[in-house]
Amino acid sequence: MTSKKKPDNVVFDEKSQTYTASLKPYATDIGAPAITTTDTVAWKNRNIHAVNKQINAKYLELKAAYDLMMEQFEYNNLVYSAKFNFEPVIGYIYHLYRNKKQEAFLSVIGPKECNFDYIGTFKLNADKIWERLETFES
Image (cartoon, rainbow, N blue to C red; front, side, top):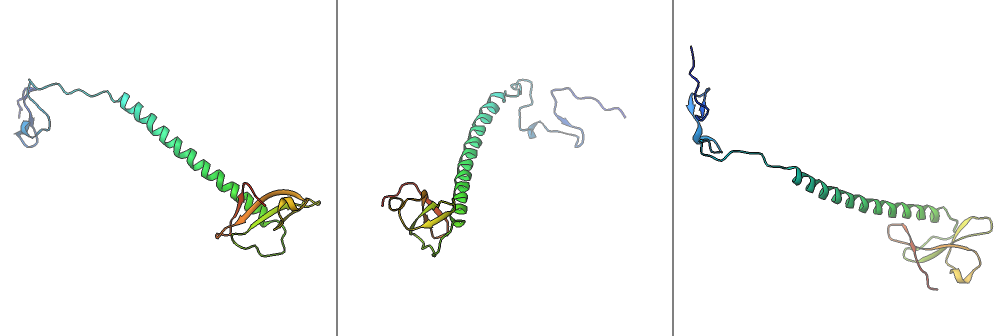
């Protein structure tokens, strides 16, 4: 059985043995514009640059949050490992010092009222996390 080949401009489906030009999502006649692929390199480069900037900004944001969290972690270790003979009250201000033996201790006495090596001023928040206060007015 010899099948007769249809011309290139005829859209014929061999399986269903029907003409399918009207079913195609694109024009199939000879006068139709040529289908060409668009250059997507510029679009890709633009978007790659934009996405990289966005990811880098998110990374820097997360890194800053991580650095802040690690700083809080170190301050909490420092204060919780210090010596104190009282139960700190949430919201009160305390001062951290080093004595002559280089041991850290927590006190309610302000830095202007004593001669110990002043480390910092801290406040215990409701989450039991020690917050370092940048400045202290006595």
